[in-house]
Structures are given as C-alpha cells and as structure tokens.
Image (cartoon, rainbow, N blue to C red):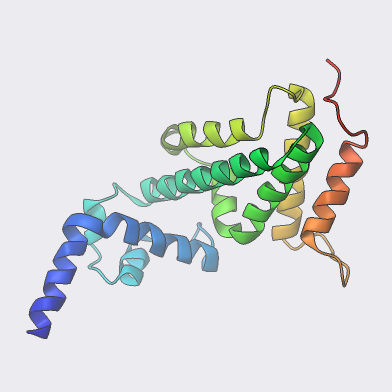
Length: 196
C-alpha cells in the first residue's frame, strides 16, 4: 500500500505540480551555491524526481534560470509597489523603495545576482516583461528620470557591495540605517523632485 501511494505521489509531481517544486529546489540551490553551478540533474535530485523529469516542464537549464529570474523580478516589483504605497511624498517613497530594493537583494543574494547578471538573448526575452514591470515600480511621475536613474544606480551598487561582503558594517550599524543615510546623501533636500 505504501509503495502505491509513493508512486502515485511521484506521478502527480510529473504531471501536475512539478514545475513549482523544481523552481523552489533550484532557488534553494542558487542561494547555497550560486547559479553558475546549477544543473538540472541536481535540481531533480533535490526535488526527489528522476533526472529526466524536469525536461517535461522546462526546456533546459537556461530556461529554468530564466523562470527563476522572472520570479525574482515579480517579487521585487511587488516589494517596490508596497514600498511606493507606504511613502507620503517623493522623498519618503524614495527611501521606502531603496529599503525594499536593498532588502530584497540581501534576503535573496543568489537570486538577485542571477537577475542582474548576464543573460543570453532568449533569457532576456523571457524575463523582459517582469523586469520592466519591476523597474517601473521604482519610477514615478514625481521623479525626474535622471534622478531616478541615479537613485537606482546607487541602491543597486549598495546592494552589490553588501551581498558581496565588500562594505564594512560597523558594530551596531545596520543595513537599513546605511540605506537611510545613503539615500539622504543623494537627496538631501526634502519634498520636491529634481528640477527638469
């Protein structure tokens, strides 16, 4: 009886809900080891399925990485949207968005590196809509495009410095406090957008 139940569960994975299981397994692996070393064989092993099972749900390793990057951009976009809604003026929205961006990178360093790393043309095409939507959440009608680009460059660079361990964080200091001071240094005057 137990064997029948196990094989039924395995068949269910193959036919219905294996793709989210594969994505979750791949995500755990890239957080532990980075995306450069990811293999579908190891993803299958982590998911508890045969080595060939993933190919019924994703074309190849590159397609799975694109799925992961798209998922990451959807999550980042949702975090930026929530942050935008918390702000009451351009400056507070800017700070909330910066905290959300850096916070996402720090919570998901392997995924973040995949999202912002080099992708092949097919991968770029697969993630384009999700990436564009996430980036749109970081912009707004009350933000000058040049200032928005400068803020993005700043929080992106800050994120990379932190997740790569290149930014010394003093005892008692925190990442959110560093983000707050960094945003204040870029936008020292409250209340208005950068003049056009």
